[in-house]
Length: 497
Image (cartoon, rainbow, N blue to C red; front, side, top):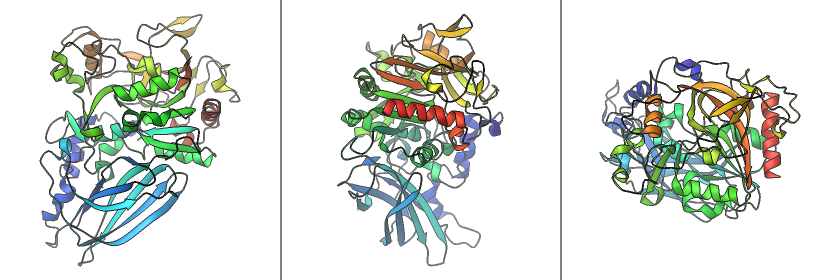
């Protein structure tokens, strides 16, 4: 997404447009009942997988609803190249009902096709394309995805990328509700057992703010082209298979990794304490706490209405599903990432403009080796690598350089290497209000500072943690900015070496 193209639009406005354009998202199946111009039913096919990740020896279960009597599937690993690994034609099709609570409790469709995951399939992101041709010659296409995680973690790679699949689900309005709204209102629970609206033609919301294609795919394409071997997992693997991270040197978060559960954090914080390294090439990272249900097939979060969460009325608020920086939770994400959206906000989005670049403060740091950057230089202006949602920390200036106050949870030893102005919104999504109520209490009249800074920084505590402090870092890789590419190589080489 290019935030500058969106102008004053906010997520709620886009959500209304999106739900209208896909008939409330669930219309992918219900369109068969809508007459086309020639009074013929509109063909459709929609699908999802019964798990988000598999390993060799598993069977990937594909749940499908289609108007066609027959359909075909093609499965391909997508990275630096697209490699087709499986095709099957003439699969029997059937139309499945869409429950009223599909958004929150899933579609409950049966598995229509169970595909064995071969030992030859490398760990990675796998695209599932579905195609139909009706008797009248009309066609339809659908899409789903899954991840193949390594059967032997770290055997072939030292780097593990965990995809931000919780964020995909939070923004998915298929069935009429996401954690942001829809024709049925704002959801408090979202299910993975439904198609992803971001694949639908005409989608104006889900794909703008979430999904593999926006951030992770271009990062992986660059990294694999550059010769890096990367294994894959999904957010929920950190919770339900925490042992997966232990053998790796480096774990990555890329793009928009907004929704984390407490067990996910436990896994990564233990990994860091034991000497593992993490690089957050992401922004708005770990901002909302979620609770997993249905063995990881659903997420619950009350978000800004945290006072309505049943946990709020108890005495233990550690799992309260609002902001991680909420004073009642007592576990600000700064302790993990070094930074938080609460102290930065938006850059080149909503009412906040900017150059799209970082001002460099400590050019002698190892991150900048070989870049030629000097103090005060601008990093990433050509491709506007700072944009959309950004994370920062509280700091003061000492001898002209920013130094963290650590009052917000940012760890001792965190170094601020670059900054860019950013701010919370009071005109669009009311993030200024949400953050203030999380920090100071529901109904407070007190407000946090509306302006802050996106922060590029680093700390070591057991392992080393690097954060780029923004969602758009990958733009510098796709734009082949030599300084952004060199910094990324420095991080991957040093922390995975």
